Image (tube, rainbow, N blue to C red; front, side, top):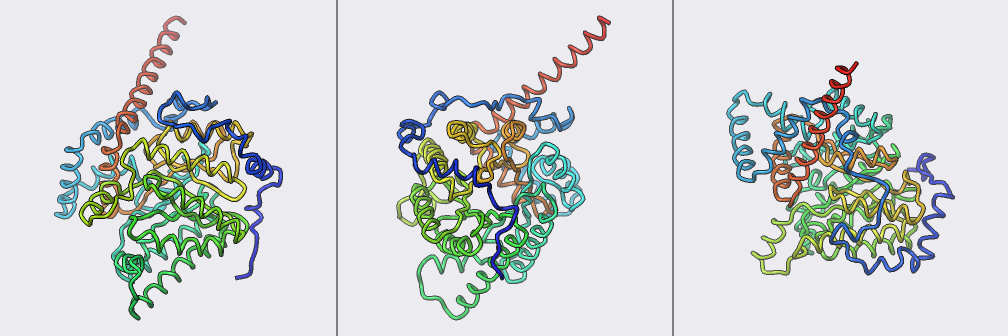
Length: 446
């Protein structure tokens, strides 16, 4: 492929100069902020964005939709109930009982965009009117064979092609385990000698990923590659680094994901920055806290090796916020997606941007949350002029059920997350009742 630099990807020199000045004057940035510990709200610098405006957050929801969201989060607050309902849904769908319409009208509607293109395109347009981009996430878990991997790749290529002509789809996303056998990733990660069959399959994995990244480059739309379990992540890191060196010459097209509950990830982040500078490519990074906490700890305990996960959530929070700072210090070579439902981390990024006079729509900075969650963060950031996107899963109800089950189980495990969602919905319902009462009183006075 002939090398090119996409016109849409070129960042203005004046914008990037602001980033370069940060790197030249790191000792002045934040006045001692590197030693700060962000473990409570009081330690955060003041920002000009409030996440308390529920009128902005829920402006697209009717009273009925808001009440439905309230019921769903009320149910998912109870871990026992989540497990019971998840198992019941699997059994009833497997038996062919007519529960699909109920699932689709409730939890599926809350967290997914639809089964068909015409359904999720309505959601994309709705989010677009609020200046929020959509990251389409094909949540069908394919079979672990060549046919399944090829089908998933074709679906990803179709989404990339679709994103090319739609400004409301700023990027796409994928998991390596959707195009590569887990067993093969484990073998490569172990350092064992590969058989002829293994080498052939690994070459096919490399070719699939290269085709996907090449299509993303041609479409000039980034692709976020999710992180996986620690014991298969090393070969994934190697593959993504090779793709970044190949396709991130003008801007970051290929993004890797750092799970900051791992205590080694910020050191890896720094090494990636050094590599990007040395090889002359842009580093694309999505930062998240992590998705496999219990699985990681259980495996480490069972197999007798040190857990790769921080012992406490506060340590993870500190590592996440440290990654935000590392990014700002190297903004001229790094592009980031701040993937979090944590208000404090979003406030921290906003405060850094304010302190360093970075424009709110800086092309190297995106905030992202899951569809159906943390709307007070997404919509208020977008309303204030920041780059925001929502992960939007789609696919047949039956096929997305594993995703919905994990989503519900993960939500119950996040301390305070469901309580926060309920709190903001209750606040908006109270506000609407007061507003209606005020309108009626004014009408009566007239």
